[in-house]
Amino acid sequence: RDGNFTDFDGLEPTITWENSAVVNDVDVRYGIDLSAKTTNIASLPRRIWGRATRVFADRFALSTRLEMDVQAMDRIDFEIDGQDEETDLSLRVIGSANANVLSSPSMPKGGGRSARVSWLEFTKGFDNDGNRVTINPRYNVDYGYGDVVLTYDADDTIVKVTASKDDQIVTISQKINEENMVSPTLSRDGSLSLSWDRKLGEDNSVRTTLNPNRSIEVEWKDAAWTANVAFPMDADDLSGATVHIKRDVKF
Image (cartoon, rainbow, N blue to C red; front, side):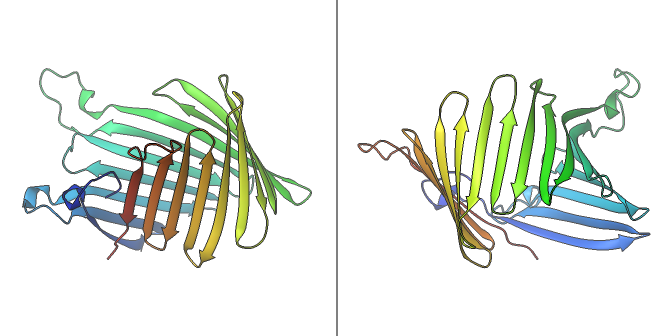
């Protein structure tokens, strides 16, 4: 389980099954998440999803993903991704739709099929003397909040600026060698953090983030395992430490 727990009763393991096929030039992937703990057959399925992807004219790619919580089947979440490889432009739309296709007599016509967008973003890439520059405007419809992410990738150095009307954040990632990278981050309010990424082997890495006067966070990824540990920076009290452990199991 990806969460906090004090004993094994807090664990909620999930089994994921997925498959893929190609149908009329459409790449189709689908799967289901099953609870490995419950003994109630009705509660066994947790989530079902499917994604269809097609490339048009060897240039345009369109992908749509639908997902439903089996225990709450009144809503379908959708994600639409589009990409134009030639112009280096992509977009993403995230939202949800009412899954009640049959309206009740008291419901207005079409009221059972309403859909709404909750997230919208575009990404445009440029080449600058061999270095890659991207501009990524994003907008959260639910909160009425938008920002822009600018990235400059010059091989061993990556500069990322996230700017909104309320805050500006700059991260400079410097590759030291093939195994190590350091990334200081500075915010408009003066807060500073420092991350250290270290590769321990194939599919095995550790990221340590120091947030001065706040916390130390460690993320360890080892193939299907992911462990997150966060320590508050209070030498007299470690009761606020949290541990998250997750493992992906696919058949």
